[in-house]
Length: 233
Length: 233
DNA sequence: CTTAGAAATGACCATGTGGTCAATCTATGA
DNA sequence: TCATAGATTGACCACATGGTCATTTCTAAG
Image 1 (cartoon, each protein chain N blue to C red):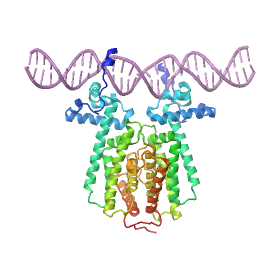
Image 2 (cartoon, protein in one colour):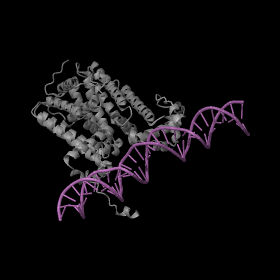
Image 3 (cartoon, rainbow over the protein chains, first blue to last red):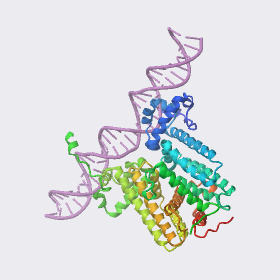
Image 4 (cartoon, chains in turn blue, green, cyan, brown):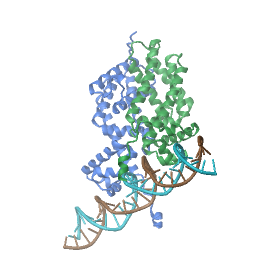
């Protein structure tokens, strides 16, 4: 008993998943991964229950702890999966719209964001939970990574926009990106959590309403930031 | 035993605090309220422990549950307190800057936000936890309330700005407010959670750096939105 | 000093937690 | 057919949780 304490060597904490898990048949791996996602999406890190996960996934607790050494490790794995999927999606949108004019592009990206959230609400929930909840382990690190990624993405778009002469030259690219990223971020968040207040005519928004709202929003941004401002007065 | 189940009438869930608590000597009330705030700020709703709270506050568990019928009720009380303090602070800033030009005003509000966060980090943490964590009870309701309040605040500023001719007339007030609110919100959040990435030269920002950053940001906004745009090209 | 009513207490409870590990099952190769 | 190595299992653990309530302590009026 006492001896065991000495013998127990620190388990290597590095790998997020054990090789036992990674060698699982893909079918099973995907099935139980979905279970992980479901539970964490529903409850967030802290409230998620390993017991419930085991139940959902239809595996035994022993197996789960063979696959991942701790709840933290499991969560980091789930985070990675969710993050990769989002990045993949963004990459696609970026590619698809690469020939469009900047603001059209930004508009399509906002729309794509809405679509993604509607299509993968579970992932979106995890994403936002991670994003803002100190609750998650490594929360700060994750947060930094996400923010950096997001800024990098928008930043590169803006830079290209300036180069193409679609945005006023001489603009501070970083800050412009910050503004756009803020808007995009907040819009999606608010969309995801269904809290757009009635004054915006978007509460419980349908797809059409969202799109109309986005369009007007982008028009506004275009008039402000665009090269040839059509300021009425 | 069995009978007691019948006798036990549903405790009135309405009041967030029992009158026993509200009749406490102010000194004690404030002292233990601080303890509540500390614990919730540190852990968030779900992870906060009633046992720890009791320990921090230096009261007995029995007393705590005499003051509040449940953890939920206690949290709602804490939320109310935090929310009131923030609102109070915003009201002050708004009053103090009421004669300033719009963008100067917005700048001062951003700065005030930073100051508030630096001065009341605990409240800020609770605020952001509430804001983004599904974790909290009544989370959706709270979220809606906060968003509405925030939009109302910025919205009224913008409207005034337009009336005074400091912002392009004919602008969509709601959407302009949304953009500004997004920026303010994200800036403060990012400030609070110390995740401004290095490319923005603001990671681990000092007050001076923050202010400089805000100033540049507002300059950018002014050039975009302001009445007489000084677009370089 | 007595006493009644309110306030404060903390031992106690059922339930759920993340995590462990000896025992069992399964599939493969001889 | 059996032996072996790896995967799988779930009973079990110590501990923490939100919440209860019979008992004690405090307070102030008589």
